[in-house]
Image 1 (cartoon, rainbow, N blue to C red):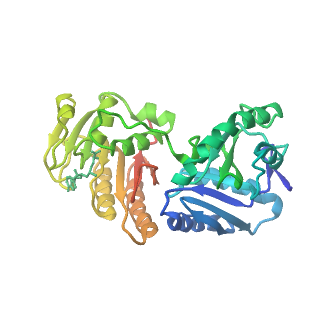
Image 2 (spheres, helix red, strand yellow):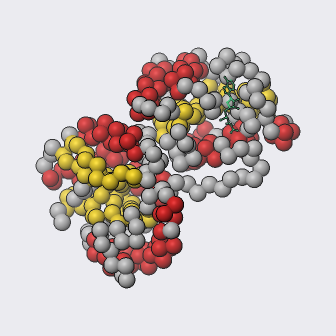
Image 3 (cartoon, protein in one colour):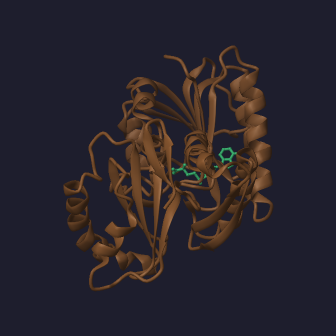
Length: 370
Ligand SMILES: C[S@@+](CC[C@H](N)C(=O)[O-])C[C@H]1O[C@@H](n2cnc3c(N)ncnc32)[C@H](O)[C@@H]1O
Protein backbone atom coordinates (compact mmCIF):
# COMPACT_ATOMS: atom_id res chain seq x y z
CA UNK A 1 0.00 0.00 0.00
CA UNK A 2 1.32 3.44 -0.93
CA UNK A 3 1.88 5.70 2.03
CA UNK A 4 1.89 9.47 1.91
CA UNK A 5 2.82 12.08 4.47
CA UNK A 6 0.73 15.10 5.49
CA UNK A 7 1.55 17.35 8.50
CA UNK A 8 3.81 14.63 9.91
CA UNK A 9 1.06 12.01 9.62
CA UNK A 10 1.36 9.15 7.22
CA UNK A 11 -1.80 8.65 5.20
CA UNK A 12 -2.97 5.62 3.27
CA UNK A 13 -3.70 5.88 -0.45
CA UNK A 14 -7.33 6.89 -0.83
CA UNK A 15 -9.49 5.50 -3.61
CA UNK A 16 -12.44 7.88 -3.28
CA UNK A 17 -15.04 9.21 -0.90
CA UNK A 18 -17.71 7.53 1.26
CA UNK A 19 -20.67 9.86 1.79
CA UNK A 20 -23.86 9.40 3.81
CA UNK A 21 -27.05 11.35 3.08
CA UNK A 22 -30.80 10.89 2.97
CA UNK A 23 -32.15 7.88 1.04
CA UNK A 24 -33.78 9.19 -2.17
CA UNK A 25 -31.35 12.11 -2.45
CA UNK A 26 -28.40 10.15 -3.86
CA UNK A 27 -28.53 11.99 -7.20
CA UNK A 28 -28.37 15.37 -5.43
CA UNK A 29 -25.41 14.07 -3.42
CA UNK A 30 -23.75 12.92 -6.64
CA UNK A 31 -24.36 16.33 -8.29
CA UNK A 32 -22.78 17.97 -5.27
CA UNK A 33 -19.81 15.60 -5.32
CA UNK A 34 -19.17 16.32 -9.00
CA UNK A 35 -19.46 20.07 -8.33
CA UNK A 36 -16.89 19.86 -5.52
CA UNK A 37 -14.50 17.54 -7.40
CA UNK A 38 -13.74 20.20 -10.00
CA UNK A 39 -11.88 22.18 -7.28
CA UNK A 40 -9.74 19.09 -6.70
CA UNK A 41 -8.43 18.71 -10.25
CA UNK A 42 -10.22 15.41 -10.16
CA UNK A 43 -13.29 13.48 -11.09
CA UNK A 44 -15.39 11.00 -9.18
CA UNK A 45 -17.04 7.95 -10.59
CA UNK A 46 -19.85 6.72 -8.40
CA UNK A 47 -19.46 3.02 -7.57
CA UNK A 48 -22.34 2.49 -5.18
CA UNK A 49 -25.33 4.61 -4.63
CA UNK A 50 -28.39 3.60 -2.68
CA UNK A 51 -30.06 3.86 0.72
CA UNK A 52 -28.33 7.18 1.27
CA UNK A 53 -24.81 5.77 0.88
CA UNK A 54 -22.57 6.91 -1.95
CA UNK A 55 -19.14 5.38 -2.55
CA UNK A 56 -17.08 6.98 -5.29
CA UNK A 57 -13.80 6.23 -6.98
CA UNK A 58 -11.65 9.27 -7.52
CA UNK A 59 -9.18 10.08 -10.24
CA UNK A 60 -7.01 13.14 -9.68
CA UNK A 61 -4.76 14.91 -12.08
CA UNK A 62 -1.90 15.26 -9.56
CA UNK A 63 1.13 13.08 -8.70
CA UNK A 64 0.23 10.04 -6.61
CA UNK A 65 2.21 11.31 -3.60
CA UNK A 66 0.07 14.47 -3.41
CA UNK A 67 -3.33 12.83 -3.77
CA UNK A 68 -4.11 11.78 -0.20
CA UNK A 69 -2.88 14.99 1.51
CA UNK A 70 -4.80 17.05 -1.05
CA UNK A 71 -7.98 15.06 -0.52
CA UNK A 72 -7.67 15.46 3.29
CA UNK A 73 -7.20 19.22 2.85
CA UNK A 74 -10.32 19.42 0.72
CA UNK A 75 -12.29 17.34 3.18
CA UNK A 76 -11.52 19.99 5.83
CA UNK A 77 -12.66 22.72 3.49
CA UNK A 78 -15.80 20.89 2.34
CA UNK A 79 -17.05 19.74 5.74
CA UNK A 80 -18.96 22.94 6.62
CA UNK A 81 -20.09 23.24 2.99
CA UNK A 82 -21.69 19.84 2.34
CA UNK A 83 -25.43 20.15 1.85
CA UNK A 84 -26.56 16.64 1.00
CA UNK A 85 -23.84 14.77 2.96
CA UNK A 86 -24.20 14.33 6.71
CA UNK A 87 -21.05 12.25 6.96
CA UNK A 88 -17.88 11.99 4.86
CA UNK A 89 -14.73 9.89 4.89
CA UNK A 90 -12.00 8.98 2.40
CA UNK A 91 -11.95 5.29 1.46
CA UNK A 92 -8.70 3.33 1.80
CA UNK A 93 -9.91 -0.28 1.79
CA UNK A 94 -12.78 -2.34 0.42
CA UNK A 95 -13.43 -5.72 2.05
CA UNK A 96 -15.97 -7.60 -0.06
CA UNK A 97 -15.68 -11.00 1.69
CA UNK A 98 -15.14 -10.66 5.42
CA UNK A 99 -14.63 -13.91 7.29
CA UNK A 100 -17.87 -14.12 9.27
CA UNK A 101 -16.14 -16.35 11.85
CA UNK A 102 -13.45 -13.75 12.55
CA UNK A 103 -14.18 -10.31 11.11
CA UNK A 104 -11.84 -8.62 13.60
CA UNK A 105 -8.72 -10.19 12.07
CA UNK A 106 -9.75 -9.15 8.55
CA UNK A 107 -10.51 -5.60 9.68
CA UNK A 108 -7.27 -5.22 11.66
CA UNK A 109 -5.21 -6.52 8.74
CA UNK A 110 -6.76 -3.92 6.43
CA UNK A 111 -5.80 -1.03 8.74
CA UNK A 112 -2.22 0.05 8.01
CA UNK A 113 0.07 -0.23 11.03
CA UNK A 114 1.28 3.39 10.59
CA UNK A 115 -2.25 4.77 10.97
CA UNK A 116 -3.14 6.58 14.21
CA UNK A 117 -6.79 7.38 14.89
CA UNK A 118 -8.48 9.17 17.77
CA UNK A 119 -12.00 7.84 17.22
CA UNK A 120 -13.78 4.92 15.57
CA UNK A 121 -17.33 4.87 14.17
CA UNK A 122 -19.33 1.91 12.90
CA UNK A 123 -21.62 2.90 10.04
CA UNK A 124 -23.99 1.35 7.51
CA UNK A 125 -26.75 2.52 5.21
CA UNK A 126 -29.81 4.41 6.46
CA UNK A 127 -32.27 1.53 6.03
CA UNK A 128 -34.31 -0.97 8.04
CA UNK A 129 -32.12 -3.80 6.81
CA UNK A 130 -29.03 -2.13 8.20
CA UNK A 131 -30.65 -1.70 11.62
CA UNK A 132 -30.05 -5.43 11.96
CA UNK A 133 -26.33 -4.70 11.78
CA UNK A 134 -26.44 -2.83 15.08
CA UNK A 135 -26.23 -6.11 17.01
CA UNK A 136 -23.11 -7.05 15.04
CA UNK A 137 -21.62 -3.60 15.72
CA UNK A 138 -22.18 -4.04 19.45
CA UNK A 139 -20.41 -7.39 19.32
CA UNK A 140 -17.45 -6.02 17.32
CA UNK A 141 -17.02 -2.60 18.87
CA UNK A 142 -15.49 -3.47 22.22
CA UNK A 143 -13.15 -6.17 20.91
CA UNK A 144 -11.95 -4.15 17.91
CA UNK A 145 -11.43 -1.01 19.98
CA UNK A 146 -9.36 -2.96 22.50
CA UNK A 147 -7.24 -4.54 19.73
CA UNK A 148 -6.59 -1.18 18.09
CA UNK A 149 -5.75 0.43 21.43
CA UNK A 150 -3.30 -2.35 22.34
CA UNK A 151 -1.50 -2.14 19.01
CA UNK A 152 -1.24 1.68 19.24
CA UNK A 153 -3.61 2.51 16.34
CA UNK A 154 -6.19 4.12 18.63
CA UNK A 155 -4.61 7.06 20.48
CA UNK A 156 -6.53 9.78 22.32
CA UNK A 157 -4.97 12.77 20.52
CA UNK A 158 -4.72 11.43 16.97
CA UNK A 159 -6.54 13.80 14.57
CA UNK A 160 -8.28 11.19 12.41
CA UNK A 161 -11.53 9.27 12.70
CA UNK A 162 -11.72 5.69 11.42
CA UNK A 163 -14.99 4.81 9.66
CA UNK A 164 -16.01 1.14 9.37
CA UNK A 165 -18.84 1.22 6.86
CA UNK A 166 -20.73 -2.08 6.53
CA UNK A 167 -22.93 -2.89 3.56
CA UNK A 168 -23.91 -6.17 5.22
CA UNK A 169 -22.25 -8.68 7.54
CA UNK A 170 -19.64 -9.59 4.91
CA UNK A 171 -18.92 -6.37 3.04
CA UNK A 172 -17.28 -3.24 4.40
CA UNK A 173 -15.40 -0.15 3.32
CA UNK A 174 -12.82 1.47 5.58
CA UNK A 175 -12.58 5.25 5.56
CA UNK A 176 -10.64 8.01 7.26
CA UNK A 177 -11.62 11.59 8.03
CA UNK A 178 -10.12 14.51 9.92
CA UNK A 179 -11.90 14.48 13.32
CA UNK A 180 -12.78 18.18 12.89
CA UNK A 181 -14.25 17.53 9.45
CA UNK A 182 -16.72 14.71 10.06
CA UNK A 183 -19.49 13.84 12.48
CA UNK A 184 -18.93 11.86 15.68
CA UNK A 185 -22.51 10.56 15.19
CA UNK A 186 -22.39 7.41 13.01
CA UNK A 187 -23.71 8.33 9.51
CA UNK A 188 -24.20 11.87 10.85
CA UNK A 189 -27.38 10.75 12.63
CA UNK A 190 -27.86 12.18 16.13
CA UNK A 191 -29.88 10.01 18.49
CA UNK A 192 -32.51 12.50 19.66
CA UNK A 193 -35.40 11.52 21.90
CA UNK A 194 -38.80 12.96 21.09
CA UNK A 195 -39.63 15.11 24.15
CA UNK A 196 -43.05 14.08 25.47
CA UNK A 197 -44.07 17.67 26.19
CA UNK A 198 -43.21 19.10 22.75
CA UNK A 199 -46.26 19.96 20.60
CA UNK A 200 -45.01 18.39 17.31
CA UNK A 201 -42.38 16.07 15.88
CA UNK A 202 -40.98 19.07 13.99
CA UNK A 203 -39.31 19.93 17.29
CA UNK A 204 -36.61 17.36 16.47
CA UNK A 205 -35.67 19.28 13.29
CA UNK A 206 -34.79 22.39 15.25
CA UNK A 207 -33.17 20.38 18.05
CA UNK A 208 -30.91 18.75 15.44
CA UNK A 209 -30.22 22.10 13.74
CA UNK A 210 -29.08 23.53 17.10
CA UNK A 211 -26.92 20.46 17.79
CA UNK A 212 -25.06 21.11 14.52
CA UNK A 213 -23.84 24.42 15.93
CA UNK A 214 -20.30 24.18 17.29
CA UNK A 215 -19.88 24.27 21.08
CA UNK A 216 -18.57 27.82 20.81
CA UNK A 217 -21.62 28.87 18.74
CA UNK A 218 -24.03 27.23 21.18
CA UNK A 219 -22.51 29.18 24.08
CA UNK A 220 -22.33 32.46 22.13
CA UNK A 221 -25.65 32.34 20.29
CA UNK A 222 -28.10 30.53 22.59
CA UNK A 223 -28.68 32.55 25.74
CA UNK A 224 -31.66 32.80 28.10
CA UNK A 225 -33.63 36.01 27.58
CA UNK A 226 -32.89 36.21 23.84
CA UNK A 227 -35.76 37.34 21.57
CA UNK A 228 -36.99 35.00 18.88
CA UNK A 229 -39.49 35.35 16.03
CA UNK A 230 -40.84 32.01 14.80
CA UNK A 231 -42.57 32.31 11.38
CA UNK A 232 -44.95 29.43 10.66
CA UNK A 233 -44.79 28.45 14.33
CA UNK A 234 -47.96 26.41 14.89
CA UNK A 235 -48.46 24.14 16.74
CA UNK A 236 -45.17 25.08 18.40
CA UNK A 237 -42.43 22.42 18.17
CA UNK A 238 -39.73 24.92 17.25
CA UNK A 239 -41.00 27.52 19.73
CA UNK A 240 -40.88 24.81 22.44
CA UNK A 241 -37.13 24.24 21.80
CA UNK A 242 -36.38 27.93 22.24
CA UNK A 243 -38.37 28.40 25.45
CA UNK A 244 -36.61 25.32 26.88
CA UNK A 245 -33.45 27.40 26.43
CA UNK A 246 -35.02 30.31 28.30
CA UNK A 247 -35.75 32.48 25.23
CA UNK A 248 -38.85 34.59 24.57
CA UNK A 249 -40.72 33.80 21.38
CA UNK A 250 -43.10 35.72 19.13
CA UNK A 251 -44.92 32.93 17.30
CA UNK A 252 -46.36 34.07 13.94
CA UNK A 253 -48.99 31.82 12.38
CA UNK A 254 -52.71 31.93 11.54
CA UNK A 255 -52.91 28.45 13.07
CA UNK A 256 -53.23 27.95 16.82
CA UNK A 257 -50.40 27.31 19.21
CA UNK A 258 -50.54 24.48 21.74
CA UNK A 259 -52.16 25.54 25.03
CA UNK A 260 -49.46 24.68 27.59
CA UNK A 261 -46.89 26.53 25.49
CA UNK A 262 -49.00 29.68 25.72
CA UNK A 263 -49.41 29.23 29.49
CA UNK A 264 -45.60 29.36 29.90
CA UNK A 265 -45.76 33.18 29.66
CA UNK A 266 -42.75 33.07 27.31
CA UNK A 267 -44.70 33.03 24.04
CA UNK A 268 -46.67 35.76 22.30
CA UNK A 269 -48.89 34.47 19.50
CA UNK A 270 -49.39 36.82 16.55
CA UNK A 271 -51.95 35.70 13.99
CA UNK A 272 -50.41 37.25 10.87
CA UNK A 273 -48.91 36.48 7.48
CA UNK A 274 -45.27 35.52 7.99
CA UNK A 275 -44.30 37.27 4.76
CA UNK A 276 -45.69 40.58 6.05
CA UNK A 277 -44.81 40.50 9.78
CA UNK A 278 -41.71 42.47 10.85
CA UNK A 279 -40.45 43.05 14.44
CA UNK A 280 -40.29 46.60 15.85
CA UNK A 281 -36.70 46.05 17.10
CA UNK A 282 -33.91 43.72 15.96
CA UNK A 283 -34.40 40.24 17.42
CA UNK A 284 -31.70 37.69 18.21
CA UNK A 285 -33.21 34.85 16.22
CA UNK A 286 -35.48 34.41 13.22
CA UNK A 287 -36.87 30.90 12.82
CA UNK A 288 -38.86 30.04 9.71
CA UNK A 289 -40.63 26.75 8.95
CA UNK A 290 -43.37 27.96 6.56
CA UNK A 291 -44.26 25.61 3.74
CA UNK A 292 -43.58 27.79 0.71
CA UNK A 293 -41.47 27.94 -2.44
CA UNK A 294 -37.82 27.84 -1.28
CA UNK A 295 -36.73 30.87 -3.28
CA UNK A 296 -39.59 32.90 -1.77
CA UNK A 297 -38.38 31.95 1.70
CA UNK A 298 -34.77 32.75 0.74
CA UNK A 299 -35.86 36.20 -0.46
CA UNK A 300 -37.75 36.78 2.80
CA UNK A 301 -34.68 35.79 4.86
CA UNK A 302 -32.53 38.09 2.70
CA UNK A 303 -34.89 41.02 3.48
CA UNK A 304 -34.68 40.30 7.21
CA UNK A 305 -30.87 40.24 6.99
CA UNK A 306 -30.52 43.40 4.93
CA UNK A 307 -32.91 45.32 7.19
CA UNK A 308 -31.16 44.06 10.33
CA UNK A 309 -34.39 42.53 11.69
CA UNK A 310 -32.55 39.47 13.08
CA UNK A 311 -28.98 38.56 14.03
CA UNK A 312 -29.22 34.77 13.55
CA UNK A 313 -31.44 32.66 11.33
CA UNK A 314 -32.46 29.02 11.15
CA UNK A 315 -34.93 28.17 8.40
CA UNK A 316 -36.23 25.20 6.52
CA UNK A 317 -36.32 25.27 2.72
CA UNK A 318 -38.86 22.79 1.33
CA UNK A 319 -37.38 21.40 -1.87
CA UNK A 320 -39.25 20.96 -5.14
CA UNK A 321 -39.56 17.48 -6.70
CA UNK A 322 -37.16 18.24 -9.55
CA UNK A 323 -33.91 20.15 -10.02
CA UNK A 324 -33.37 20.29 -6.28
CA UNK A 325 -29.61 20.86 -6.47
CA UNK A 326 -30.13 23.85 -8.82
CA UNK A 327 -32.87 25.29 -6.59
CA UNK A 328 -30.66 25.00 -3.50
CA UNK A 329 -27.84 26.78 -5.34
CA UNK A 330 -30.20 29.57 -6.34
CA UNK A 331 -31.48 30.02 -2.77
CA UNK A 332 -27.97 30.03 -1.29
CA UNK A 333 -26.93 32.57 -3.89
CA UNK A 334 -29.74 34.88 -2.69
CA UNK A 335 -28.58 34.47 0.92
CA UNK A 336 -24.87 34.93 0.18
CA UNK A 337 -25.59 38.10 -1.80
CA UNK A 338 -27.61 39.54 1.10
CA UNK A 339 -24.94 38.47 3.62
CA UNK A 340 -22.21 40.25 1.63
CA UNK A 341 -24.06 43.57 1.86
CA UNK A 342 -23.75 43.60 5.67
CA UNK A 343 -20.90 45.36 7.50
CA UNK A 344 -19.75 42.02 8.95
CA UNK A 345 -20.55 39.13 6.65
CA UNK A 346 -22.31 36.33 8.54
CA UNK A 347 -21.69 32.66 7.71
CA UNK A 348 -24.32 30.92 5.63
CA UNK A 349 -24.58 27.14 5.96
CA UNK A 350 -27.05 24.62 4.65
CA UNK A 351 -27.50 20.91 5.23
CA UNK A 352 -30.09 18.21 4.83
CA UNK A 353 -30.38 16.94 8.38
CA UNK A 354 -31.50 13.49 9.47
CA UNK A 355 -34.88 14.85 10.61
CA UNK A 356 -35.35 16.86 7.40
CA UNK A 357 -37.47 15.15 4.76
CA UNK A 358 -37.88 16.80 1.34
CA UNK A 359 -36.17 19.88 2.72
CA UNK A 360 -32.91 21.33 3.94
CA UNK A 361 -31.97 23.47 6.93
CA UNK A 362 -30.15 26.78 6.51
CA UNK A 363 -28.28 28.73 9.17
CA UNK A 364 -27.14 32.35 8.92
CA UNK A 365 -24.89 33.16 11.87
CA UNK A 366 -22.83 36.15 12.93
CA UNK A 367 -19.13 35.44 13.33
CA UNK A 368 -18.58 37.88 16.19
CA UNK A 369 -19.73 37.98 19.79
CA UNK A 370 -23.23 39.42 20.11
C1 LIG B 1 -44.54 22.74 9.03
S1 LIG B 1 -45.65 23.74 9.90
C2 LIG B 1 -44.67 24.41 11.15
C3 LIG B 1 -44.42 23.49 12.28
C4 LIG B 1 -43.74 24.19 13.45
N1 LIG B 1 -42.40 24.62 13.11
C5 LIG B 1 -43.65 23.28 14.66
O1 LIG B 1 -42.52 22.93 15.05
O2 LIG B 1 -44.67 22.94 15.23
C6 LIG B 1 -45.88 25.07 8.83
C7 LIG B 1 -46.69 26.21 9.42
O3 LIG B 1 -46.53 27.32 8.56
C8 LIG B 1 -47.71 28.08 8.62
N2 LIG B 1 -47.72 28.99 7.46
C9 LIG B 1 -47.69 28.70 6.15
N3 LIG B 1 -47.71 29.85 5.43
C10 LIG B 1 -47.72 30.86 6.32
C11 LIG B 1 -47.71 32.27 6.20
N4 LIG B 1 -47.69 32.86 5.02
N5 LIG B 1 -47.71 33.01 7.33
C12 LIG B 1 -47.71 32.42 8.56
N6 LIG B 1 -47.71 31.08 8.72
C13 LIG B 1 -47.71 30.33 7.62
C14 LIG B 1 -48.81 27.03 8.61
O4 LIG B 1 -50.00 27.55 9.15
C15 LIG B 1 -48.20 25.93 9.47
O5 LIG B 1 -48.64 26.05 10.80
